[in-house]
Image (cartoon, rainbow, N blue to C red; front, side):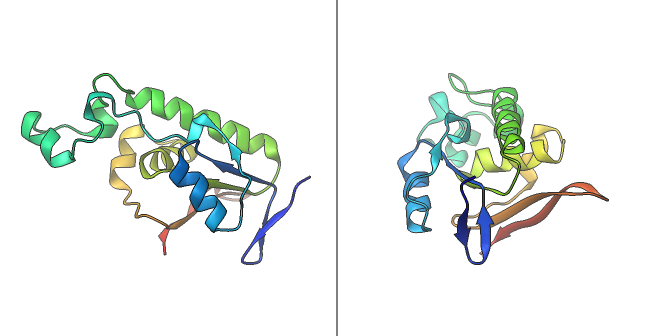
Length: 150
């Protein structure tokens, strides 16, 4: 079993989105060869790629990513399915997993982990270059043990 270390923690697997910025973050953090998975790629914004939320709201008041999705891109249900599939992969690892990815998919992974509706992801602020920890507790089940930590 592969064991990698970061600040005293060891990991049995390290995953990255196929997008360069996630793979580069993994490299900077000391993990130059993560397992690349398309399950961690960012939300497919379709026609909204490169358009700001403010611009979308000007055209479509009340629009919400995790409720409405993106025309020509992914639906919230599709992103939630990807998040669940990534969780299944992590569960088969049998140990600690480290993932380098993007804000919207990581928020989806967190709510899928907690078995919440995908719309709950809108309520999770997630800044760039932060740490988050999801864990299984024998007494309390699935927990969001740390979120958006610098």
